[in-house]
Length: 187
Image 1 (tube, rainbow, N blue to C red):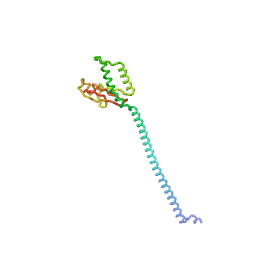
Image 2: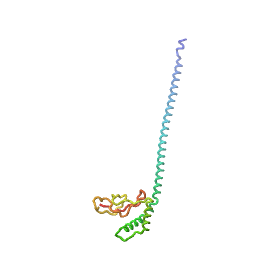
Image 3: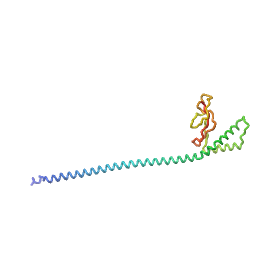
Image 4: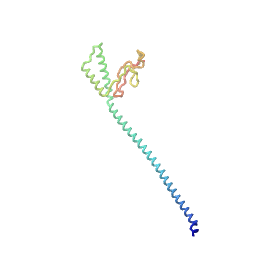
């Protein structure tokens, strides 16, 4: 009886082999399924990262747009009266010429007290609105700030390339040029 129990039935061995193969096939299928799920997970994580990056870029672009439009609006408000102020500059030039002539001791012209008050009020009002004049005489010629009317031989060597005389003052409105200075340059 012992011999019968130890001897295995060949049919049973085949069934065990088939069962092992089925289990390995099932575990292979599970591994393939897990691998596919892992690949799909990696793919989805990549897509999420890409979409997150696009979102952050779009958000940053929109934020920059908002900042730029606010800055443009503030600049527009600061320089809204630029044309009006620029049209007052010839009046200021005439006042400056009349004052310069009146202050010259060689002339008999006088600048009345009332006209002096109007002149001071005009200058103060323009200054309060952000208009200030450009310092030109004696500085290096800069084509972005100055309009050269003419050039003359420099009286001294150190005046070559510099503004020798200012015919009409240049003006800024805050930091923006509203009129270039008309100057004579030494060559």
